[in-house]
Image (cartoon, rainbow, N blue to C red; front, side, top):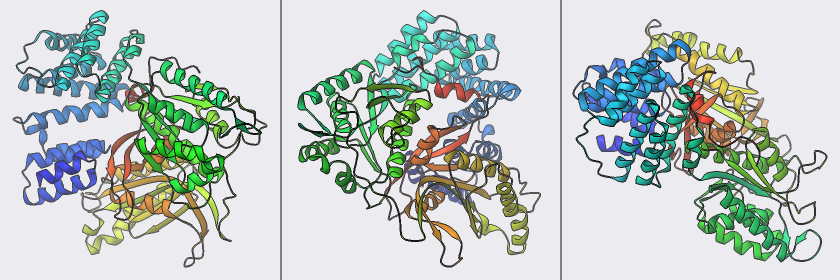
Length: 611
């Protein structure tokens, strides 16, 4: 069973890993490995309050001979502290620091020592922080780093220690050496950069020196569609060559790494080709299946583009088809795909602790332009509204570029298309409620959740329920995210023991964002939502860990472009249904206004002004 749990955990299938831990504990209630792994599943899935309760219920703090069990308590308190503020932050930071100090005393490791040092400093106890920082620098560590990654962390810990002691020169040189030890481990680098930015912000130190160490920047790209040749709405070969040179210079100048966008004829393909030539990772986000996209956005502009499209498609790192719609593109789906692609690039930048860039091939937007509400000009406006860096390369052809072939997105009579953010809720373990307590369960639990929905400042446009499940639909992802957090807190506030209900009950909330069909339900004779995107939202719920909010990549990406009140942590790529492709899922957490975690998310050393 352990191997199954580890495989599920490493693949991101946290719900099944957690369920396996629970099943194993039924037979082996004293197995501390299963208890430890169950708590890790909850931490990784964002269910921090539930993880904290399980940590104490399992009495992991009493297991003094296992380093993992010792460290998980400190890690949990650190996660809770970074989401707190004021006195709560200081108290939890001190508790975390003391637990890390205890782990270090028992294991002698540099990792718990540097975490103790940093948490003491964040808690306002510099003397303790400096003591542990010196231990990191001058203590004797038995183990010699055996891999580049281990060597990286040893040097990174020392760089952090120098920073805590105020020696910026030594911190810079040691951190550079750490990056040289494991140069391609960008995720590890990002973890260090976020930690150091948090410390320099608290200590009031200069952060500009971190800029040079930032990894290559993710970028979103978009541009006008055009054909090649002479004539109206065509671009001469010589103009394409000059445009390609400008794209190459831009990619090099701004240290661009992974790129995200579509692959229409003209600008998209030119940028994608240039990125691939530089060794950048190409991620394609298409609103419809590839064949439909080709018919609308590539084939009409010349056979030469089709061959270049296929060559880029073959080398793409990831191809995301957001819908299974077989119709020609609509303006709504074009904007939807662009929003998701922009969000993906921004989420990637957050993971890498840098700032994303947008590269556009287009003229300056004209508010009176009838095309400003869709496509490239719309993308540019959305990105600019977020205050993110943007490079706009002038389109060298006629001001009015060719557009993709689109059609009105009308459906069958009685139906209309809409973009909706959807939530599915289910109470795991409700089948364990004894029959005689079911009416009480309905009144004390389901009625509480319904009352929470009624009290929302922005109530759902559509709501339905069956058994212990609920389905809610909203206009925007921000509304859905706020509703999900309110429902999570409402459920967490119910005292199951006092209500004589199983304490194992847990609320699972799943979210998705996408195009749906609105029409009348033939059975209930009232408006309802239909389509494959509704099914995606429903299937995610089954993969959600109780106490967590799991959302699709589309939901997380769209939310990233419109709100800083939430953090989306990558869970894994999960097959949510045997008849659906795997989906990348994220755990959603609300961040208090003054939470320290906010400092870790957004700040790059790069200037936040347009390029």
